[in-house]
Image (cartoon, rainbow, N blue to C red; front, side, top):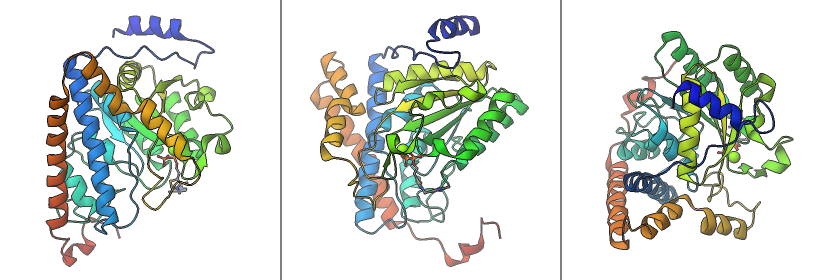
Length: 346
Ligand SMILES: Cc1ncc(C[n+]2csc(CCOP(=O)(O)OP(=O)(O)O)c2C)c(N)n1
Ligand SMILES: [Mg+2]
């Protein structure tokens, strides 16, 4: 969108205040867009289901945070971004990696701690990177990626490379101090960064309403004049149009912007969380009424873009990719003991 057109639509979209923008309408998807989104989201879902199984079988140790339910967020953003734009996130990161195009084999083998993993089997679930795919981690310290993502954006501005740093964090992380120090610098220097707050309603076992005084996360940048808006993070078309708007805002020198993605995680916080702090009905309601993959599936069938057989074929193709990754992740050797002191700072 041209800068002038975007500015006009932004000012007309201003609802409550200068920082409260109205979300643009969901993107119009072609048949190819729907099929692409379906396959990408299904890959993340099946990958995560397999990771959960391997964890249960003892192949994956330590912490493992699944992204099931939130697939539309990274998929819609990936569909809007350009080559060179960066992703950085916390520990719930497998979906982000797959969305950037990182290989299922390398991600799964890192989960099982094998040589073929993205960090040579020495990082695990929360610590993977790919310079080639512009994925900057994978961070276990809640909120730490917000400062780092702001640094990526500073680098982009300094190098005038036209890239935007998409910096993802959770509703819980949004209460962390360094988030606001980062907001200040990003607004002051008009850095090309999108702060993507993935509001999945819980931080570990604590619901948003119990932990946050201001639950409209899109307005968390108001003190710094950072605009933002809330997005239906379960609808991949809404995520894509919101991301296009935000990318254009950041890329044309307008500075940071906040997207609050309203989403939901179906599983517990990590594999060791039985999620007793919420009802089964609550989860079931989200699954049956808002599931991001089922929404696309229903449209594909309704519009005659695909029949059940075609969707089953996509599911099979995705399952094959994931089971190949799982085989690799179980059979690839562990790192050699001589690797114990390589790639680390002492
Ligand atoms: C600095 C810091 N404090 C506390 C923790 C423990 N911790 C890990 S995840 C988490 C909750 C974060 O929730 P949220 O930001 O909503 O992300 P979600 O897990 O929902 O994706 C906490 C408190 C940590 N890892 N780092
Ligand atoms: Mg959360």
